[in-house]
Amino acid sequence: MSPAAERGEPDRRADGDSESLARRIAELAEGKGASELVALDVRTLVGYTDFLVICSARNERQAKAIYDEVHQRLKDDGRLPARVEGQSEAEWVLADYLDCVLHVFTPQARERYRLEVLWGEAETLDLEAAA
Image 1 (cartoon, rainbow, N blue to C red):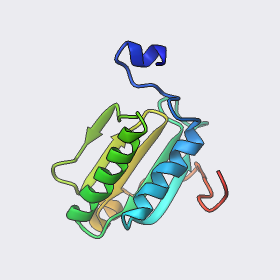
Image 2: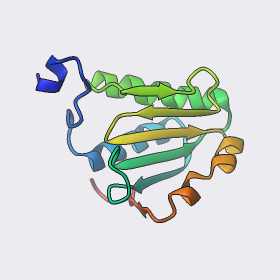
Image 3: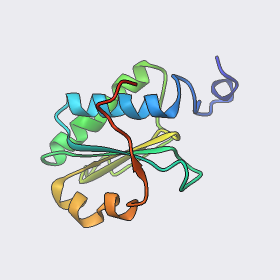
């Protein structure tokens, strides 16, 4: 067990580096039907996370299902989010895994908040490339 886990804190590197985590989250979201998947590398822009994984769901029900799948599979791997926002409304679900933050949007919310525009200077991680 890591020192962070022993203290009851989330372990930032429990299952590998942040890029691998971003790829894993994207893969899990895609497996539940997420569309328009984008992973933004914000390591040079902010100090609180390394990647933002952004995806769309058809509606609130699918957004919740995508989050639930990611949450359960990462929990099975021993990783829990430090914080989750928007789970009950599911218009925009944010799950903060410290090294990577998952954003699941309904189409209307994604258009409203336009995170890709907000973080336009961030590099995009090629999710098709091998991890």
